[in-house]
Amino acid sequence: MLTKRIIPCLDVDQGKVVKGVNFVNLKDAGDPVELAFFYNQEGADELVFLDITASSDERNTMINVVESVSQQVFIPLTVGGGIRSVSDVRVMLESGADKVSLNTAAVSDPNLIKKSADHFGNQCIVVAVDARRIDREKHVNSQNDSSSLINPDLAIEKSTEWEVFIYGGRKRTGIDALKWIQFVTELGAGELLVTSMDSDGMQSGYDIQLLSEISKLVSVPVIASGGAGTLDHLCEAIVDGKADAVLAASIFHFGTYSIRQAKQHMNSRGIPIRL
Image (cartoon, rainbow, N blue to C red):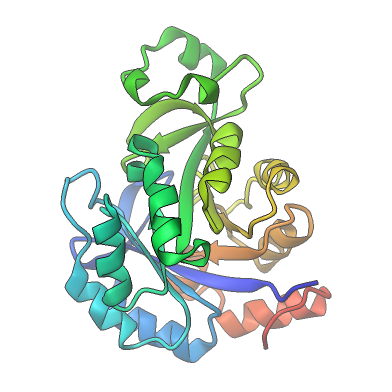
């Protein structure tokens, strides 16, 4: 079994790391450069930096923050938010990122995934998927304002359980999350960052059903995101959800657990981890 990874996530808004619940009610969690340095020293396997309002505010990712963070870490760094073109991907990689995460722009122009993977290699392209369980009553009775984004082959059907959201969870797409995940993998996504919007910030555990369904469909690495509250939750995402890595924010940012504690616990459960 390949070594599993623990990845702290830095959600950045207006230059500060923030953490919310279900993508709202954001709380200040510190300076991104200081936290990046801290997690590098703590032994994190990778780091994810997401400029969570870049797409919704229609601006580019804060290059200066990315450059500063990359100078503080010697572990793989993934950067996302506000990346809309192949040239944007290039800028992020040249600024110090090892991988680039595509989300909203990938839904608007799926060919961006293929073009980016062709230019820089699949290993550099992460597709982030923000998925929410479908409330049947609300779904039937509401008008989807994003129908122009829907590829008919990816549209939600009666059997669909999760819908893809974009713009930091602010906008529905009408896209079936499992269909979308298969589609982007075929286009060249080298890794998937899957966030359960229902579990995000709740600290009640990852959406194991979502993770396990995805693991049956794709062969690329899957990063579990949204819901970590205990060290057992990290283990469950790996063992039951079949994830290749676990991403967490609240439990690390606010000192509930350390990276070292998480790794020791996972190791005690027989999960291969870099100690």
